[in-house]
Amino acid sequence: MKDPLQKDCIIATGSANFSGPSTTDNDENMMTIKGNPGVADIYFTEFLRLFNHYYFRWIVKKMTEQGSLDYDNPAFLSSTDTWTNQYKAVNTRENA
Image 1 (tube, helix red, strand yellow):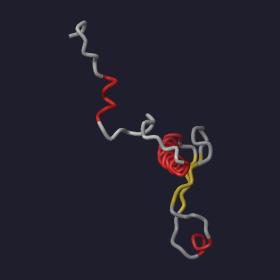
Image 2 (cartoon, rainbow, N blue to C red; image 1 turned 90 degrees about the horizontal axis):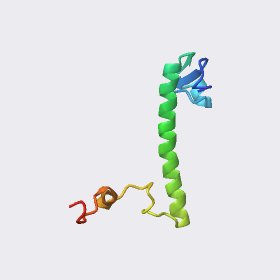
Image 3 (tube, rainbow, N blue to C red; image 1 turned 120 degrees about the horizontal axis):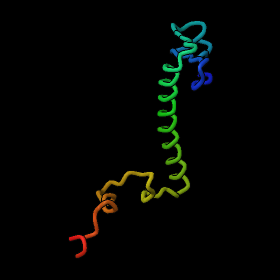
Image 4 (cartoon, one colour; image 1 turned 180 degrees about the vertical axis):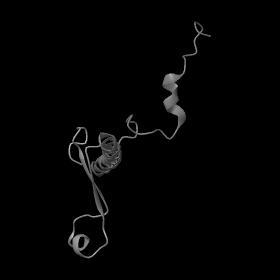
């Protein structure tokens, strides 16, 4: 993608990866889409979704290697229902 948020955006998509076999032997394809911000927005959104997914996994791996993985960190989902406690009303005589 080149300037995916601009009016004159360019998207290159397809199966070709520009390796030696890709450019000489394999049956690969490449399509360029120019000046279509709607399509660029969709491609860019999917790119960011995948990037964030793998970035989070990389962070978890690094934290695990460093021994600093903390499951009480709010970035991690809780395996119990204790996270709902913060949303429950306090049971006191005033609001009973």
